[in-house]
Length: 120
Ligand code: FES
Image 1 (cartoon, rainbow, N blue to C red):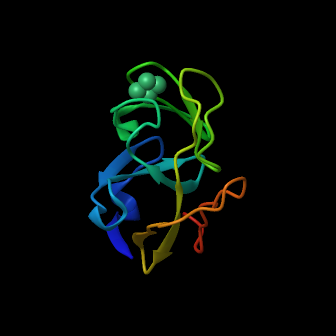
Image 2 (image 1 turned 120 degrees about the horizontal axis):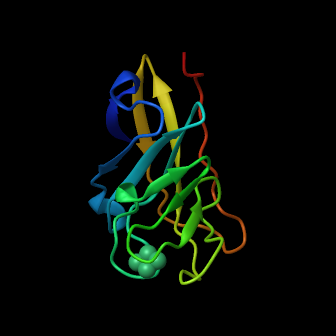
């Protein structure tokens, strides 16, 4: 479990990148439409940071070649990305946001981000 920040420090429409060396790369955490989502930060197409992309509802657009990823599943919805990125569970405990890095995913069964506490 990786501490990210206090929920008030990640306003709606913003993202933050956290290091997660144990899973081989950083994680991007997003706050969008009242929920928090976490996916691999590195785009599955090339080496771009998705936390620096443009957030559009439950999707983030890669800043390098504009592939769009669904934050709920990690699946790309358009080219040039063809492979999904991993999703990671997110929890809020006493106002603190945590990410639970996903080490493995089952092909075809993406792990979905969860939220245990509603955002005020
Ligand atoms: S690096 Fe993300 S779409 Fe190319």
